[in-house]
Structure formats: structure tokens, C-alpha cells
Length: 124
Image (cartoon, rainbow, N blue to C red; front, side):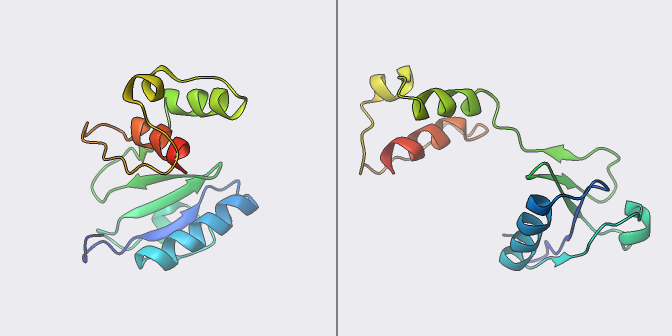
């Protein structure tokens, strides 16, 4: 992680237990400061020029200083593919690539990491 990345980590106003746990763990792992949101606005929590990581529904969103919209991580189709695999279904990528448990896989596609997530599930 960038040594200058020192975000405030918080939750949405509709704070849930999963958001509190994941937010606190994120702050501990990446060096940010976790603060309970309560009824405060982001403007009330954030120092000028500070980045904010907001946990909502268990997922993080990054609000960079100077931007008005957060950047969300989204599993896209990987979530549906993982659901199908967990129910015993197949995934064409895993079949074609010949990925099996115990292998080491490098995802060099430079995308959102959805293929890496599927491969990680398969290899264990």
C-alpha cells in the first residue's frame, strides 16, 4: 500500500455490524483510522485533503480527495460465477485454462481481478 495512503475508514450512515468489522479490519491492516459514522456527514469526519474508505453492505468504496463520487469495487459477473461453482456447476474459463486445486495462477489481464477470484476459488 502507498506509504502516503492514510485514509479515514468509516461506514455508511446506515451502519451494519459487517461494515463495522470490515472497516476496522481494513483500517488496522492498511494503516488508516476507523471512525464510527453515526449521524455525521463525511464533511464532519474528514480532514481537508484526506481520502475516505466507506464500508457499505460489506464492500468498500474509495472517496479520493477532490472527487465528488466514490469508486466502488464490484465483483461483476465473478459473483454469479462463484455462486454457480459453489453449487457444483462448471466455469468455462477454469475448464479451458485447466486450472485445478493446488496450482499457482498469475492473472496478467490487468482487469478488475474477476478471473483471479475465480482461479483463487478453484486452486484453494
